[in-house]
Image (cartoon, rainbow, N blue to C red; front, side, top):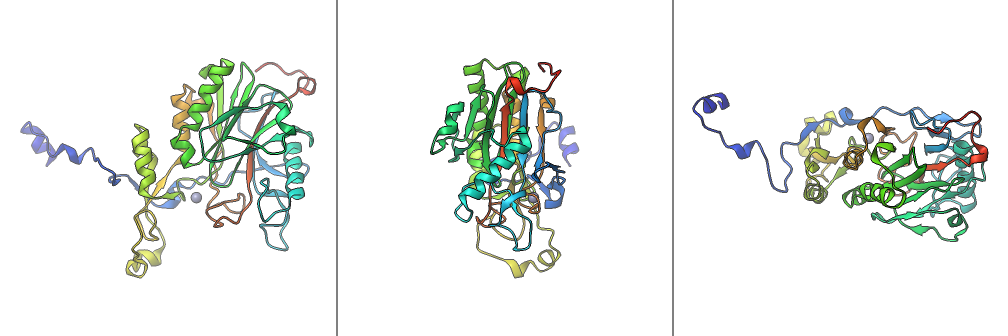
Length: 344
Ligand SMILES: [Zn+2]
């Protein structure tokens, strides 16, 4: 039919090809399994911590990695007979001393020294990025921000997550490191673009010298959202629509007997399909590309916190009763650099 119209020099209802308006139509329709990332394989440290190093980031001057829930001393979120876990957040259910001990275990796993200070933040889904210094380690309360940058060696910058996306950035030439916390709100507020902009402004970082790693979070397979989230992204990003999928439940009972599951809930919140899923990993990858990073300089470490509960804490999957993981990045102190290292 379209060919006949073309032959006659007519265009058949062009609006059909470019859907507009708040209701997302003609999004990619998929089953959740098609969007699920493979389960990452953690590295087992000698102290029992299982963490995710970043492929290709074996630079002699750089410490970096993502924690998982495996290893550690916490008993707050596991079965009685299970091994301890690596909760790194001062949550209500866990003991502060245990969390501090877990942080030392992570510091030891990533930097080789348990006493390496880990600088955490009081995160609030903003796009506020601060310059961190070693003196911050002595603070009684963490700074309020969702990103931090430093060129000071000997400390680990951290962001805490349990579904939100952690993003780490390193400047290979200037030796500057940054960590960002990007949930959907922070992503809409362009936390990563803001943070990389600050690296350029304060440290003179050039995009070609930057490498970035996107850590595990709630992936497109699981991250269902309401239409207000779709509207926010579509109004903020030219590619906003491309970040969403319509995901159908593949539950055979629900597919066969949909009337059993009918609800009055808004689209995106209904247990029967389609539900609207956002891909925050891709959203943050696009921001890094818009900052001028090369595609090959961006590592997606993978993993879905929401459906890979054996490896990750998930706020959404656990209805809020869960621990926190950390993404950490730091600059090795000069005296402790590996022998024979070169400036990479
Ligand atoms: Zn998932």
